[in-house]
Structure formats: C-alpha cells, structure tokens
Image (cartoon, rainbow, N blue to C red):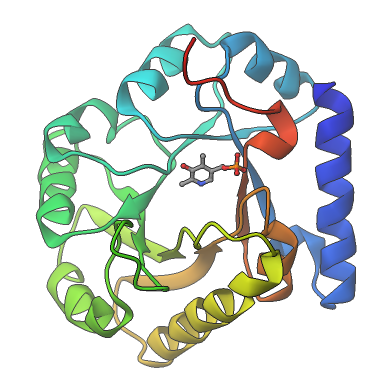
Length: 230
Ligand SMILES: *Cc1c(COP(=O)(O)O)cnc(C)c1O
C-alpha cells in the first residue's frame, strides 16, 4: 500500500508541475511520518524517500536513534524552547520557527553544538487564531531581528493553510505566501535566503505546487489515516 500511495503522490506532483510549467526537480516531497512506525519509514526508504517530517521532538529523536541508516529529518510542528537542545544537531530543516524567543533559543543551542541550523519562518497567512506563526505584517520586523543570528540560516517561509473542504479555497493563501517570499527576496538581506516555500499537505499540495511550493508535506496521502489513540 505504501508503494502505491507514494507513486500516486509522486505522479500528482508531476502533473501539478506540468500544469504550472514548473520543473519537478524544484519540488521536494516531505513524507510526514508522525504517529507512524519506523517500519513504514524503512520501507519507504527502499523506494528512495530520504526526507521525513515529524511534529514532535520526542518522536523525531526516537526514530533518529533507531533508524537503520541516516535520512533527512524535518521538524514541522510547533517547537517548545525547552526541547530545542535535543534536535538542533539532528534536523536538516526546522519549518516551524514562529517567535523571536524560539529563534534566540535555536541560535543559542546551535552555537553550543557548533552547528548552523536551517530554518523556515512559519507565517500565519490566513490569520487564524488557532494557528501558530508570524503575521504577514510582522515578518519584516522578525527578519530584522534574526538576520544577525550567526547560528541560524533562514531558508524561506512555511505555512499551514486552513482546513478546508476544497483545496481551491487555499489558493489565495498560497499566492500570498509566494508573493511575500518574492518581496523579501527583492530586499536582498544578508543571510536571508528565500529559496524554500514549504506549503501544501495531503488535501491541497497540488494547488500549492501550482502556486510555487518547493516543499510539500504529505502524511495521510502516503501513510494512510493516522490513529492518535494507539
Ligand atoms: C501532520 C502535518 C502535515 C501532513 O498532514 P496530512 O494532511 O496528513 O498530509 C503537514 N504539515 C504539518 C505541519 C503537519 O503537522
């Protein structure tokens, strides 16, 4: 089942790229393995999947330690400052940097371990009360504050779009994030790279790709429904 699901998602990505006249090499699929057993990841690895997303520090560290050969880990969920120290040297990218307080902690812990951590700024593009993320209007202030942090490298922006019935409803939010990344890019800040746009999940990754996503985070579409009661 994993193989068929993966192939289906990969095909849909190709189709969306074709439709939008984009090079498929610009789009990276992150397999969101949260709540799923290590065996599923090990199977996907045999099909060539190297990028995995987790939303909990504990689960990421646990899988990191048990996996048979190294893969690239993406922390995609809200990160508490007291847990930063456990992952700064284990992740390829933190997608969910949503406060200055958190950025400072990452910078501090990364300095201690002498690493540079790649991060994305999480933007609450639809202004939802229930979502973490920095408001669009506040992103420039945020950048001014973190651009001097030597152990952080900003790679781009991330958003979690609203939960909607129709993916089309999220197109405007994806457009807005893309536009924001272009605006930031045009300012040519030192140390701020805007090459990554992490947006789109199982329900809306095709629309996200049409609007410029370079990373899509797909869980259910690959692994099937999650059971949080296990
Ligand atoms: C769980 C999760 C996903 C994947 O969601 P699906 O709808 O299962 O594809 C993507 N991004 C974040 C931040 C998540 O927490």
